[in-house]
Image (cartoon, rainbow, N blue to C red; front, top):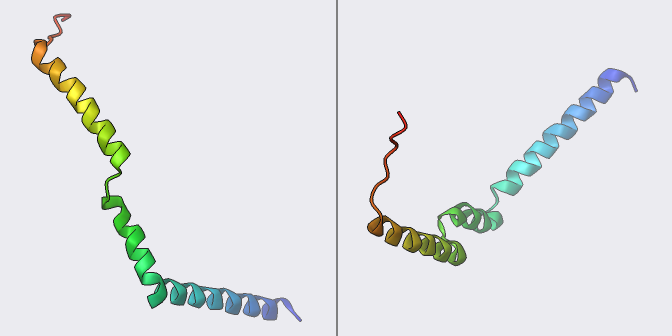
Length: 74
């Protein structure tokens, strides 16, 4: 087996792997799980949401009680 034949087999192997991956990724069985993962970034985590509202509430009373600070170091 010479080098050219080996390169041909390797190219066919890579092509077959590519076709298998494409068929797997676009199969109807995987569509629901891919859609779920794709839309997961739009779902809010309750723990993170509670933490953000707590920080906003803490900062909101500080803003109303204090005056705006200015930098007089010119």
